[in-house]
Image (cartoon, rainbow, N blue to C red; front, side, top):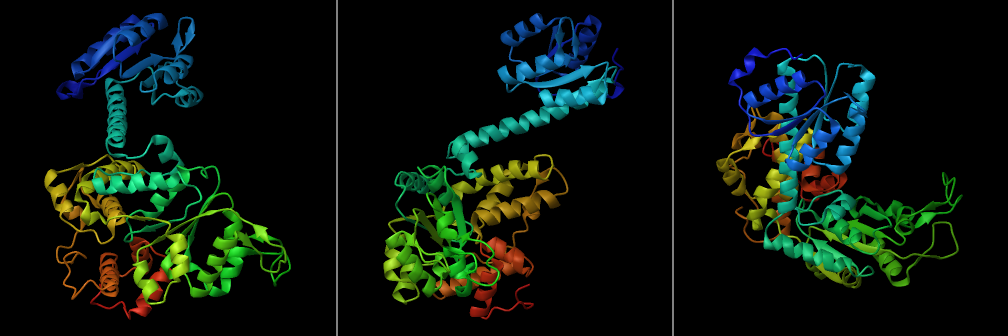
Length: 472
């Protein structure tokens, strides 16, 4: 017997098709009447056969099933239906509401469990909770189908979605998929910090023949000259104090796979020379070793700097540049592809709300318009961080532009009053803006800029940027 819910009379709901499978006719009739009152479309079945028949005849969204049925176990039905009707959500009910039964119900695929007898309000809350989950998963599935430019199988491999609608980002993806077909060709990826250079590198690797082998990312600027030989070439046991066993370096670890060299422009000159030799010979010798080891890896490198300018100034070897730059993929900044801002925003809202265990918030068209007018010096990474902060700090279930803390006084790279397009001035401006946005937190600033803390510290020293009241 169900206990009534006196507060439910004013409740309304969107249409949901609910099948009630229970051998107690009084239970199914009473629950069906209550669900109909709430605005749902209920169907009743007193046997498994009748229930399966109704499932085939009607587009059922939710099944409410008892554990004890004549000649059948409700949990077995749950397990079978989650295989044959994957999108069907199931609430299990039972007069034997012990913990073991509840655990088994969830393990077989049920989304909720209620013990009989229960109050009407308990079932209403369970259905509403299920409906929110269904709406979220369907919306997320729609977003993925509409805006995700890569297949689900490739997304699972790279552990990222590649979201966008602009022709610029589609061209980038097409270039990456073309590069993936040539597994021995080195690729240089250029673009500002936060544009997703590593995502493109992973797409190239996992869409190609080397996908079954390692993708090994290395931050080139974080490797000092004193550690370079050991890190890249490895060492033999006893070659120096503390070398207790043979160790492979980055080159050997990447054998048959891909070595991703991020911030390649910051690689020291001595290491550039050694990298060039390995690319040419495809052989390395470990520190303390004598025999050469043959290696076979592809190099994908990335930078946010103008490599041709570095070459012309003698800061980067021309011969190495040509070997790394067989194919070049340039990722445009987010401010140059404004049409991608809204789909990225909606995607981040869905993903981050789930991560933070918060309801999926609404966002008004005026907020989207305001966000689309901002230039994002930190690019996609900045938009993601802003969205996460907005969800955390929002007071209700609607995001406003105030939740995103965009400083209208801050200048974008595109509109800043630089005297020219000098790269140094751009970099100084970006660092100062990032410091301002992160309240001068060095770690957070480095993360926003997409570089290591040590690299940021070196740049601040190089450009004589100090943390003062002017930066805060």
